[in-house]
Length: 135
Image 1 (cartoon, rainbow, N blue to C red):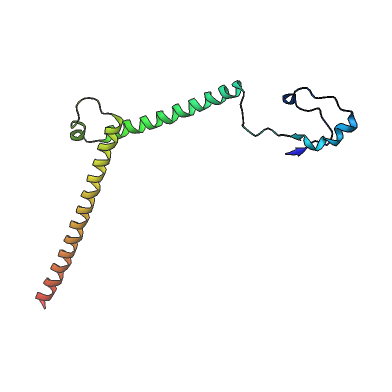
Image 2: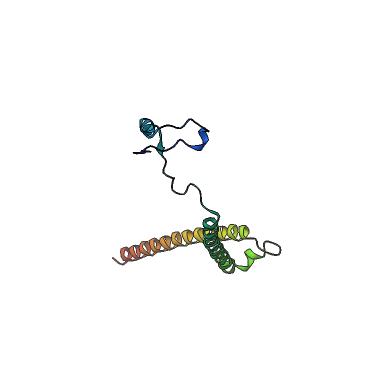
């Protein structure tokens, strides 16, 4: 808050007070302070409307992107998972089925990698045993 360098009349909220001479008012100048408005404290109605329009468009685009991604996930799901529900697949169901499918694929990959390692170890052991027999 800043102090007013010159005296000003008292605020209207104080009601009617006896008039003071200018030299008497200077003695009270330290009592009045200037309040700077806070940034964004209150917006006019026009400002609110101009803010709402772009915000609505941004939100609509965001929702559209989410819906498009969910539709793509639905298309990627195998048919047997789509048939587990009757009728229309809700967005939440599409996400749940996608998670279920991705987890199943992740487990399958891990199993396949373990089989590959086991086969490689078996081949190496077989090659080693065939070299031992030849000698």
